[in-house]
Structure formats: C-alpha cells, structure tokens
Length: 263
Image (cartoon, rainbow, N blue to C red; front, side):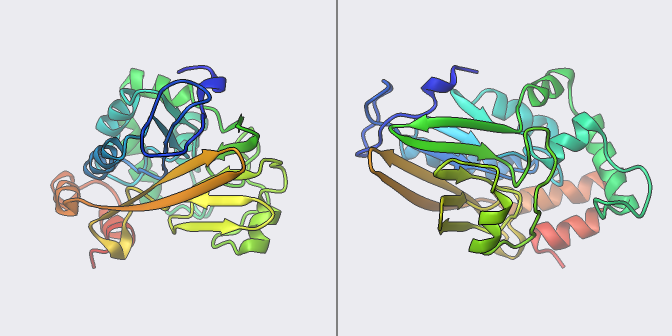
C-alpha cells in the first residue's frame, strides 16, 4: 500500500503519466464477490484504458465460488486502494449465528459464508484485515471519500436505505463532507449529482439478470471538472455457474437465482 497523497492526480487526456500533478485515470470497481473471471475481464479492460489507479469500494469476497483466488488476484494489482465491505466484516468481525437476525441472513446463507471463509489463506485474511472502512483524500481541490456504503469508520450503518434516491443519498452520507463519494453495496449502478457527486459503478461480480456483464467505471478528475465513464465488460459467466454446480456449496440455488440470473 502507498501513501494517500499518491492516490489522485489530474486527469486531462487518455495519456497517463505517473507523477502527481500530471495526467491520471482512476478505475473504480466494487462488489467483486469472489467472481474471478469477471474481475480478470474488467482488469484487462481498465489496463486497455490506461488506468494508473484502481479503487475498490469493498465486498471483494462473498457469494461467488473463487474467494481465495479473487483475494490473491487483488493483492497483486499495482497501486490498489480498497476498503472493507460488509462481507469482509462478516469474516473479520463475526456474523449472525442464529435465525432470525438483524442481517436477515438465512441459515443456509450463514453456512455459505462459513464455507467461503474456510477457503481463505492466512495471507488473504491478513490482506482483508489491512483494509479500512473509509478513505478520505483530496484531488486537485476536489475532496473524495471511498467507502462501501453509508458506514461510519467502524463499519456501522448510518441511515441505511436499500435503493437510495437523491434525497436518501444525502441523508445516508450526511457524515461525509467530501464533494465526491465513491461507494458500492447496492449492486445497481447509480451516478447521481446532488449536493455531492455520488458514484456507484455497479457490482462487478453479481450480474443478476445481466448474466454476462461485469460493471466498472473510470473517474476523470482535473481542477474544476470531474467526469465519470461507466463500463460494461462481457465475460463467460458460465465459468462461474459451472463451478458453483461442481462445488455444491451451501445456498447455491438462491445464489445462482438472485446473483447470476439462473432460474
């Protein structure tokens, strides 16, 4: 990991120069959810677009069938900036053990998380443990916050709304003073310019009815101007579904239905 002062630089053209105060592109991803084929496809696209920096807004693990492989891939992305999501919190700080619970997590879902956690190596756990819940920085006069959702710095939800409107976003992120908020959690893409610029590029690893689409984005920042480019990358989702079928892990039916559009 590197100093926060190196996180952002100016973006003016498609040419990237890795010195502060010159040109830079920021690739934004979120909610990878252990989907390695989708992550590899998006990383290749961001490389083609000459992104110098990748920011991940959390939920690297959970749901998909490649937990260890996904974390190890993330660990080797140069200049990565990432925060924890609720799925990292389940691993590192515990999760419900009985039903019903505040997380509305079923017994089978709890079994799935425990199965997934058991596959993570010590180095992967240490990497996830190193991630904060929130990062705040400044880019050429623009203040920027990176977090998974409307969490405080200890990972507790604030004014939670599942499908936020512009007014909901203002309330949810009332504890964030930055002009630009990069977030995830709600798998739907949502770029909203209200009192702040709220950017959720959409889930990379859970396509739902989109099936073979991995979502991401590129944020371009220069003094007095911010531009957002959303990205859809096609990949072979059958690789993921077939692996789920072969592994027979807990709650596989619901996971395929709700997160991969397989009925």
